[in-house]
Image 1 (tube, rainbow, N blue to C red):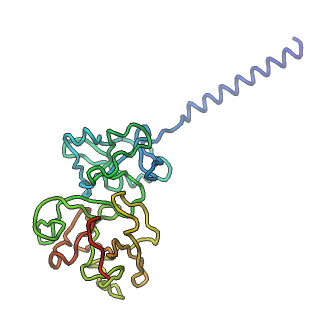
Image 2: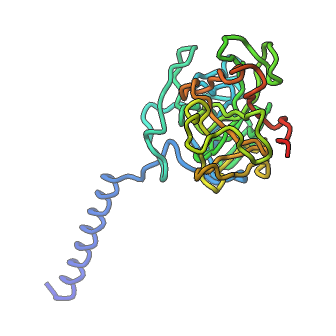
Length: 280
């Protein structure tokens, strides 16, 4: 056999071996498609599901239960994946599965059930944001969120947002995992008049400690309404000048609003976009 023919055949054989090895490697390690990832939209980074479509939170789900049922699910299909494959910067510990009242399963993020919006046609669409004032794109880094439910005080009575006895869902602010935030009626604009220097009363009404940089908020709220103050070395978030607190007897329970009647209605109200500014 002539040398140049041998060399050409050797080169061809080598090429075939390399291609075969690369093909095997690709089959053994196929490209992984995340079932939940972080996508970019006009509203910033949001959680996305199949096809990169935006996922949403529903304010009435603050307690961790799913309240979008019946015809609501036609407009807001539930998101569920038995086995999640997560994109970058997402933690498995933040996700869970609940069984809904209708028997279906639904994936949750930080305790909030996840949904799609039927009018979102493609990745990046956020048409569901603020629909009915109760739908929010699912962002991974909210500082505060909106809840909607019946306010029930520590006395077991039902209250409306104006601190009167009555029934009906009220909108109010919570932290990122659904714990209710309150204002103190005797505080002043960006002035905490409740907390003692030794924090001996902080267990009853713990201040909402945050970083000096505000994270994400629902678009129904204005960033200019938020600020921070320093309270004996800790950074407390304020809203419309009202320093924000938790109620110790809520025991960290999502959606619990026992503080609205303690020690009497009106002393520790919940807040939302309709709240008046704190007085100077």
